[in-house]
Figure 1: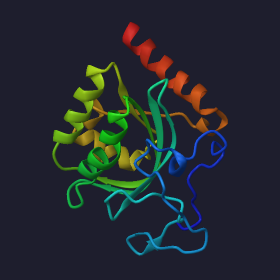
Figure 2 (figure 1 turned 90 degrees about the vertical axis):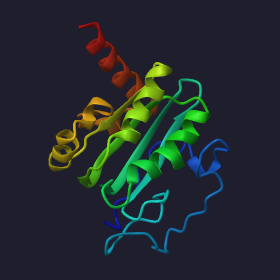
Figure 3 (figure 1 turned 120 degrees about the vertical axis):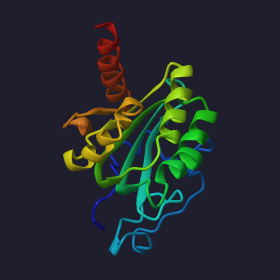
Figure 4 (figure 1 turned 45 degrees about the horizontal axis):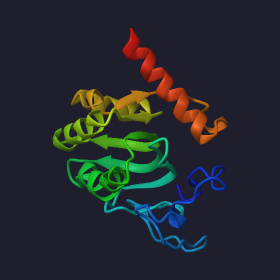
Length: 188
């Protein structure tokens, strides 16, 4: 896992630690010192810690004009023991919402497991986004991880979507593609 880096091809467009409005503004990273782990496996030092011991993320872009953020995640999403949804909601999503962002793309292809608990934070997140005509998409969550997510019917609040080649897009084009897909669904 230590070789899996957050997607870096957009760093010429956005750098979360240089964004004064980002929850991770001012963070410093080492390229050589591995300190964070998911269980016994070290992860690359570019991933951001937000209060979970098993789930890490990187804000790849926050666009305050178009009001969207793309966030890549790695690890195990564990609401049952770690209450990761509460940490994610309070420490990252609420701070981005305070800056006017209400459309979220969570890239979850490196989220290996999901353990569910209550729906409260998902419902709250959904209601706050809908009030501002926003949405949340979880992109490319592995099939086995989706199983538990769907079992609690959390996909009513955070929609699951597949897009294998998301890396070929520039951030704005990826956002517009997903926004267009969601608008098509609403028109039907």
